[in-house]
Length: 107
Image (cartoon, rainbow, N blue to C red; front, side, top):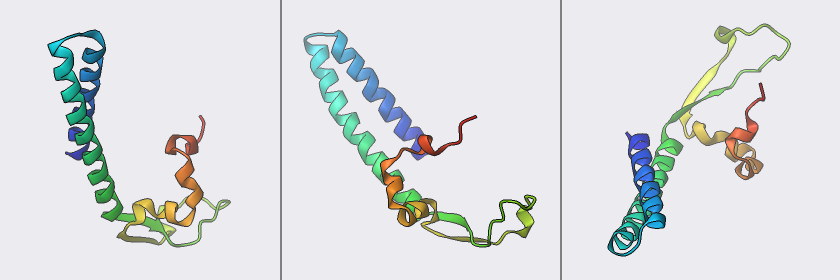
């Protein structure tokens, strides 16, 4: 639900920005108000979703990972605790500098 509301508010904001660039007069002024309202709404929804993700349960592999052994998910020990979705940012603060898409493997 939060993702849908965030997407909708961003789409309305971007549409209003486009109309603001292409129009003059009264419609332009109405678009400016709409951009301001929906930009603030987008930021608020994004912040609330971030707080929600930071507090939901996440998973962490707590057993040793053997890179040369065959993959067997049944041989792993996994713990589930609140805050583990963002656990790597606490363990490796340098990750705050990089967007997630930079860390994805190249195919």
